[in-house]
Length: 479
Image (cartoon, rainbow, N blue to C red):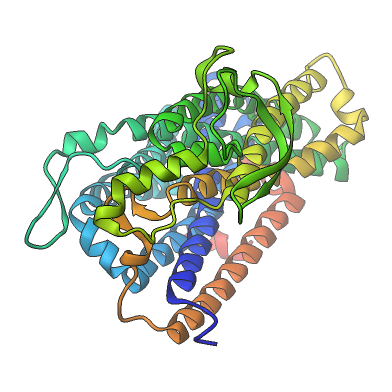
């Protein structure tokens, strides 16, 4: 077994598993906190108790995802020290600052105000209670900012110097690290994606509830669909616009990643066609066949019909010429092309689909129409679409992480050099199996609890007095 599985492979597998599973919940929590805050704001403005019921109900789902996200985040941080000790020592001075601020400021803000928000429905004025969930939402987005600041350094190192004695990267400008242009491109894309994720999930869960019983709590579910799809439409447009800016940035700064996303092995002519689908030969580094749209890649890259795109083969020669002296000639600079090519299409098509579903859903759910109740086919479409954001988010992170291969810190530290020197295949295999089992259990529990809340619906919120009862009062234990 040891001869067939490498330590680097198992360490990368564990990083991918922990990151992807954690990222199932991070954007969902960020987006759900934001939409719940909008719902409570609508309650404060309109004084309509349905919005209060919506806030409490979707707030429960938010708390579930928040809790699971915290647990999976701890596991992810733990595996850094286990498997990537060389990386941790190399990046400690850079990684430590934003992560410390994230924990001491953003996460403390989230956890403090989420506790106050849960237990103070009947203790503060409505506007003050609403402010608490907005602070929670702001805290979740602030957490994402600091995490992405660290990740952006790995994509585009800035504000550092290499210590000649230790070989470690030392921070020389915190401002440069947080002003990283990569962060400016990455952060809005992630936040808009988070809002889309929560919006589509809320709309999808509401659609399943209407399919189950379209006459019970109809106003509650329809208002949930309306609020979520308004956010979903705005966020879909935002994620497409932010994605376009980020893609154009990548086309200049990480040309191998960009060429792989578009399946371009040979440098194109003056007008570059876009391959909708293609057969890629990753062994011989060529495209066997493709279905091309003329001029489209130049339009996507430069916003005009002319403009050549460098192919992976040419970029590979450039990278070898730049880095062979430092890292040797044996380094493979080709990224997992098929993964990036198809992941990009999953992500891009999903963004357009979310916008389309939001437009159709808002039209069918307009106040003067009963179409959303009568057109059951669309409720099925909406219900099934709720799973797509998780695939789109995963595709986005596969592009981000695989796209900088072979680097763990671009141009400074390779993946092979970053692995802990004292781990074994047996220990990594064991921890992979244990983590996978834990993640499966957490995921199943999360789905089961969310499904239970959905089936129960807002039944127990019919009397708002019950919803705000003191959880430590004796009456609470008789429920």
